[in-house]
Image (cartoon, rainbow, N blue to C red; front, top):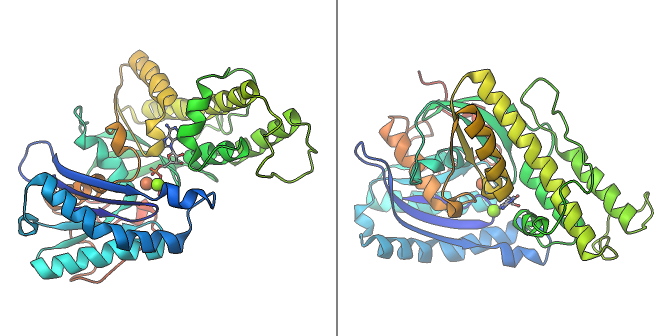
Length: 360
Ligand code: ATP
Ligand code: MG
Ligand code: FE
């Protein structure tokens, strides 16, 4: 069983990761708090924690009913140990430890990004190790070399904002609701991606790092120009109101093109650098249609196989946590955390510090 509660999604799932067959999703339930936080333009941590408490046990019942299994059939309980909001993480860890203690079953604290990273193993077209992973979510943008469960080598990462953050912040400047990624990419369908020339930061830096903070400034400047607003003035809620629908769509299409362009070119550079012929894309931005199209084209040209999680498992969910916990148990890497039921969370937790990461 997996429990995810790192941010604004409560997710519970059951995965069968026993045996040598590909892991199988037996049940999966999710409650998104997006609507609750929308009025504030972002996640309010205290509200998030309280809502996780309300949702997690009913979701657990739903998942067991879907799977047609009693609680006693659960072999191990995985929860998101971090990174994330401390109060939100504590809900998942508290419930996981209570269940584990009551059932006498092991409890495994899972790294949220390892969950994202391994999530394509639940897809109809699962990858094989080794591969290059492009992890692009709301809080992270990383390229990794993945040789097996727990064997992750960071190749490059963002030096400031994450790709999802660049989507979200640009969307906010256009007056779109939080989280802006999906809304911005929908709006972009009506726009011209070449209407405005936005920067492609670090494209020729020679390394595999990203930078997206400058993009937000460029979008802000462009929106102000179109709105005839003062260049020195602050970014306000209604800044983009004077723009017509086409101008907004053009900005959306142009900023999406810039983000996707950088992600695709850096991913292909990572493929060349490692010599690996397999690419895995994970995290919320992996749901982006343009990214999938352009990576598809680039990878086909290079003879590289590309794998994605199922669309509904790109953003946060319990299935990826159950899967990562199950794969860790299978790999004999399950007990790198404190022994017993320690209610242990790590709000800040670089993937490089993940226990078992250098297991050879
Ligand atoms: P992290 O995993 O780094 O802690 P997170 O859990 O908030 O962050 P995810 O749930 O993986 O991130 O993904 C959410 C992000 O994905 C948001 O920034 C959202 O805007 C973005 N996103 C979701 N769908 C799309 C899409 N179709 N196009 C672009 N961005 C998208
Ligand atoms: Mg989320
Ligand atoms: Fe996430």
